[in-house]
Length: 316
Image 1 (cartoon, rainbow, N blue to C red):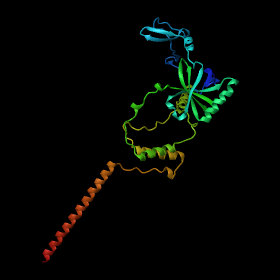
Image 2: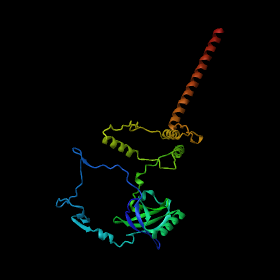
Image 3: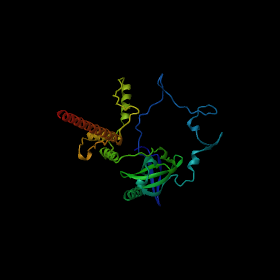
Image 4: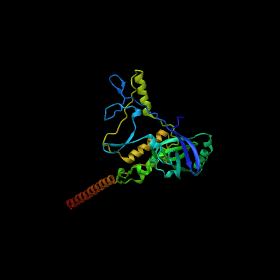
């Protein structure tokens, strides 16, 4: 496991649990250096004071807050550490809530909480079992990196996980982003549900970063002086192309069935119904055709009648 990022305790009523925070995730991205293209030398950022234009070393850099133009108040790390906060070194559990009441958009970084020493083993296990048996999650407050944060405690494979959370006023309202109200047919909804059912899986371990793999392949080829791997460009729909939603859903369901090797009655793709506009046109055409046929029949009868009368006159 990586080195601890923070050491303190969980406060659970009158129970104190010494813990250490360890990052629950790791960065697997491919990182690039900034280089001078003419000679491939590294390009680095220099920290320069804007008043005397001098390069400043890290130990000469501190924090400051601008309260007015040309007036900045310095704030030291020691002053921040001595703030009278009850959560300065404590993850203070404030409440327990049902997990499904937490909006995922509020969850930020994730960390494991490791029991710090043998004295923490029993209270750590007690909290873990309480969370497991109650099927709830704990909401807590803690101070870290110069600010107080809201956290969420839950259990993952026997370990307590701390999720850093956004405060309620940090989440933007998405009302303005929602599309205008449009009509969606029941058949379209059923097809969408059918597609979701076809794409349902229970294990996400098969997912991997294809972009990173392709990028590593390019880097390896350039390092060895080999030609870059090529990939045929997939066809892309032209801009402005109008997509028939039902046709797209039907095609998607068929593709999902074929990829899973399934063909069953439960996954039958319904035929598309003609639109009202098309139906009206078809009906009009049929009506016009019927009128034309009736007119032709009437004309034929009149012609036949005239011929018969003419024959009778000639005979007489």
